[in-house]
Length: 297
Length: 267
Image (cartoon, rainbow over all chains, first blue to last red; front, side, top):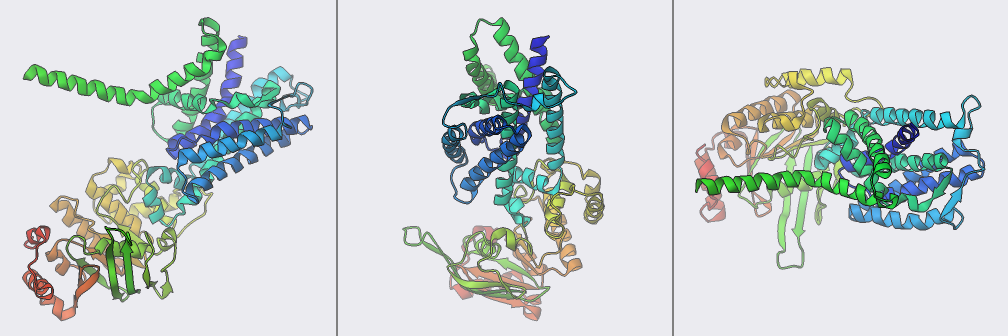
């Protein structure tokens, strides 16, 4: 039961991360490595401000920090013409120092004594809040992104990922669209980090290592279940994928002989396999055709 | 309406593959003129369009649209008043978005409230009405992804996207060349009707000499980045495809060596 609820909570909190990654990876079709940095950025900003006694402000500040990180990556790509992947790596590397600075030079910070978001509600116990808040946050932001991507700006961003030239030819500023979507994406990633820090009661910078793969795994698992249809279904499936991913991880740590530190390797293998499936299918098809050809010869 | 003065563009300057794409070209279009452009491959027709749209900036010369100097303006700013349909049906539309979403995007030239839901009901009604005029039964498929449409249907959607807010200048870059003959005729007919209805100032590149003379009000031939001849009015109405070929040969003192042109000259 504890495992079930714990995975639900984490799945929803990381579901917000998956929403952010869906925006860069699926809507813009650019895997955004800023994620690794902006998750830790959200985590550390949230922890530092919560430790100072402002858990609510911490969340908003973390989102702003993530948005800022995203727009830096966006500007590097558009204004300065740096390769998308490289722009993300540059921002991510820079953020490593910034995150340490935010945490006062140490790689982690405990919030055990601090008043986190989860202790704020007089009518709810901390344990209840740890279930209710993730549900509320995931639902709220799921709704917001779905609505956003049905507005005019949201539609422009979707079109940028689909046919950039056409968007430019329709008098829309493609670069502005890209910068905006990287901000939104990384604001969500940072929000996820911010909530995780307060949920766990500590912030550890190293917890963001490999977080992009976690998010990608969620998006891909979601797509495997729901298919790739519309943005609305895409976003819902990203959160659902994150939940399923957490249950897989929970089961794996519980029942497999693998130690917990092997989890990221498992995630990496899942993502690599899922991304390789189309090519593998193609190879198999071609192999079959070749064999067919031989049989006829 | 459009005034191109002394346009000069050199690519790969200072290298072995340096070539002059536009060679001090001058072209003036009055409001409502429909000019067809012919010329062999590499004559600079598409380059001229790219210059007008702002894909690159000119080395020398100026471009004025409706009295406004757009020589240094960004591509997406110019797109506010210029519509362009390419030869490749894939180029003008977003394949994973629906017909109405594509149209709504194009409609942001006139209407932009960034945070309102798009497309609005009012917009959809307008789009349906306009696309129904094409007689291609697309009005019942507004929620179909454009990627599922045929080339001709996609070009029709692109044409509507470019004219849903009547542009000051419409550029057609061999927009029927990739279509089968029957569909090409259909799209050309729609084009003609739309241009008439909204009195659009239009430039159309074509490789089909017969349609270059049949459609529009004026025909221009380009060669080596400049205008070789420019005919309109009675001079044009009395011109046949053969006359065009002779005119070209006389002017160039050489036979027309472009296979593509010869092949299509009898079409």
